[in-house]
Length: 285
Image 1 (tube, rainbow, N blue to C red):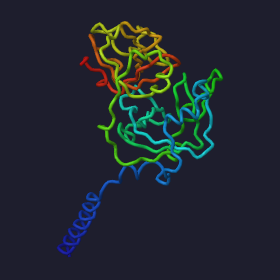
Image 2 (image 1 turned 90 degrees about the vertical axis):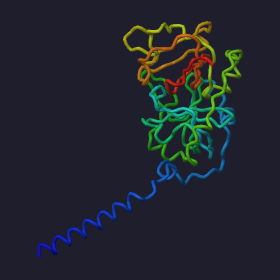
Image 3 (image 1 turned 180 degrees about the vertical axis):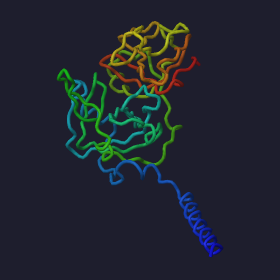
Image 4 (image 1 turned 30 degrees about the horizontal axis):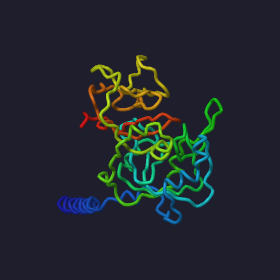
C-alpha cells in the first residue's frame, strides 16, 4: 500500500508541475489590454493646437471649463513621474503642441512610459490652466478658496484613456529651445509643455557643492521646489525648477556649460524647465 501511495503522490506532483509550467508559458497580457478603456474608439479627435485654440480664453485666464461635447486628443507621452520631479502628471505631444494630463496616481511611468501613444476621451473632464499652462483634469478648490484644474482620480482616468500599441522611446526627440524667442508670447503659447533642450548655459549657483533642490533652508522654495536661474538669463524669464522630492534633488549641480533637456512649462510669462531624470542635463555639446 505504501508503494502504491508513493506512486499516486508522484503522479499528482507531476500533474501539478505540468499545469504550472503551462501557466508560465502563457503570454503576458499586453499593456494596451490591461490598462485603460479599450472601448474608446477614435471618433472626434482634434489636435492639441486645435484644443488650445478652442479653449484659448479659458487657458489665457487660467480658468477651467468642462468638456461637454464628444472630443478627443491623441498624443505621445514625452514626460512622466519616473524620478519624482514631475508629480501626478504625464505630458503628451502630438506634433502640434503639448498638454499636461493631471492624474492623482503614483507610478504613472509604469504604464505610461515615454514613447507610449494614448487616446484620451475628454468629455466630462475639464480643460484649464495653472499660470496659463494648459492642463486636463478635474476642479480643485484650495484652502484659500481658489479653484483651478487639478488631478483627476485614477478611477476616472481609467475610463478616459486608451493605450495605442507599445511604447517607442526613440520616437521622442526634444526640440531645441530658441532663446531669441524667449519672451515671444506666441512662442510661449505654442511651445509651453513641450520637451525641449536649452543649449550651452551655466547654472548660476553651481559651484561644485550646491545641489539642485536642498530642503535645509539654504534655498528659497516655492511649493517644495527650488528655482535655479542661468547666467545671463533673468529668473523672471526662465528657471530650472526641481522638486525637493525628485530622486536627484540632493545631487550636486554640474558646473560649466551644460545642455538642459526637460518639459518647458510656463507660469505666466516665465519658462520653467522640469527635468525628467538627472540624465536630462549633460555637458554642452
